[in-house]
Each structure stands twice: as C-alpha cells, then as structure tokens.
Amino acid sequence: MTRRKQSRTDVPDVLGLLLTYEEVAWLKHALVTLEGVIDAQPHSLPKLPMLRETASHLQKKLSRMGGQHAYDYKYKVPIAANEAMILYTAVWLFLVAVEHLPDSAEKQEALNRCLALHNRFVPFLGRSA
Image (cartoon, rainbow, N blue to C red; front, top):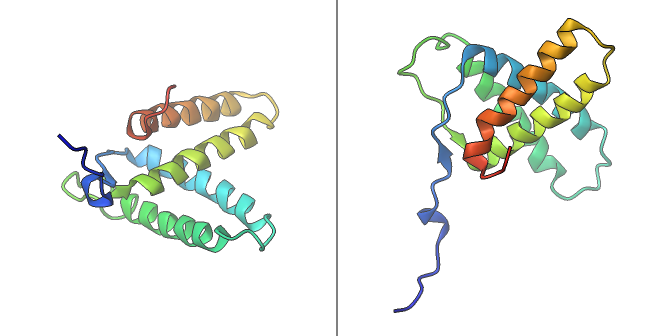
C-alpha cells in the first residue's frame, strides 16, 4: 500500500470557530496592537505587505462579525486557519501590552480575557494551553 501525498485541498482551511460579540470586540483591540507592531517593522521584511493586508482584511471581517449581524447566529463569517493563527498571535501581543499596564482591576480583567481568547483558539491550532 502506497502512502498518498496530502494535497492542500485535503486539509480543511476554514475553522468552525464561533465567537461571541464580546470576543470579537477584544480581537479587534488585539488586531490594533498587531497592526502597531507591523507598522514598526522595517519595510524590508519580505512577507510584511502580505501580513499587513491580511491584518487589514481581518479587521474588516471582525467589523462585519460585530456589526449588524452580531446576534444573528445564522450569519457565519468563515475564519481560515492562517487567519486564526494571526488572531492568536495578535491576542498574545495584546497580552504583552496589557502586562505592562499598572496593576488595576481593568488590567486583571484584560489579562483574563486574553487568556480566555487564547484558550478558545488552542483547539483549532493544535497547540497546548
């Protein structure tokens, strides 16, 4: 029996991730942090334009998710695996930014939200919590 090489079409690239309105709002904040990091990078990085474009696309997609269809559970916006990885990274960058804030109840709430978002993405990305 020969082993068949797996093609890209055999791997599903759309995740069945359901996000709450509140999670979408936090992800939008996280993407703003990611966009700030992207803008601070030297323009000579080869994949930077693609990352910038994808982050912008994700910001628009999250706006649609949190907009007029926020409470319509029949309205679905697919999230591809590469987009989920970018959102996951944005959450961690946001977590780092929050950790540098002065201690407060708001800081603790933001840390808890970031960790909860991390745990939502873990099953879809095959990472350990």
